[in-house]
Length: 317
Image 1: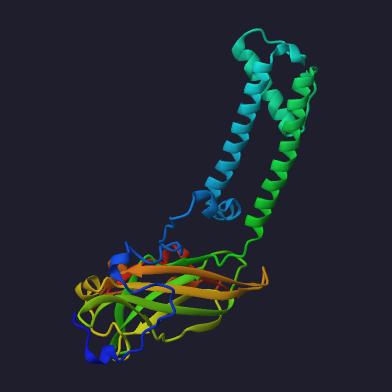
Image 2 (image 1 turned 90 degrees about the vertical axis):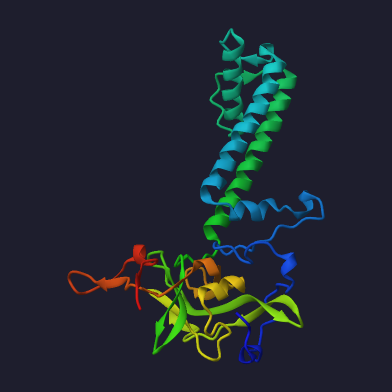
């Protein structure tokens, strides 16, 4: 779709942090989970890598899986050292074969590493005592680090927001509007003073060259005092919108991406929290509207928010 003269007059946003050259980008700018679709290169990996930030942001199953794998690997290494030191450096070992000996020193290693020390097997030689002393020191240091990481993950402020899987172009006040919705999904967790900002990234022709332009999208409402239920965010597709009269094919041609940023105050953490997401042209549906996702309780005293209906839509003319 050709960008009209009216649309050229719409003020673009140059403060998004993204450049405009389409040859420099692959895929979307922002992933659905809010992370930026960027990979950094050019300096050594260990200068770029932050163990603390990585462990704080890992999914829970990866985080605990990493801790468990580290625990097994460390004990396997020390068990191998004890195995090659020899049975003569220990007291209380009853095994005779190689495999049973390795099992005994492995479990001795776990007892030393966790400082449990059951006592049946204990080192008697100087070398075994030295290695076990190093292992016990590494053990309590490791558990101190793991405790810090657990606390950091537990206390890290989070927005706890669900966004609808698709954005919609739907009828709105005798016209049409781009809309999506989101909700806070934790019990006893309500954000206050919630603000939202929505930008559109799209390819336009400028001086005979295709370039990305970023536009602030005016919203029907960009602020709510609290978020106990869901919020349907609406951008009217009127003459002031850079997306006015765009079809699905036009959005695809413009490589449209809607970038969303929500910020609010969480009184549990007494801190600001933020969450991002985005919608590409493939995630925008035409001719559908969201169904209502809340209802009255059976006794008529409570409002029930049906979070499983957040993504549910129905067809409209």
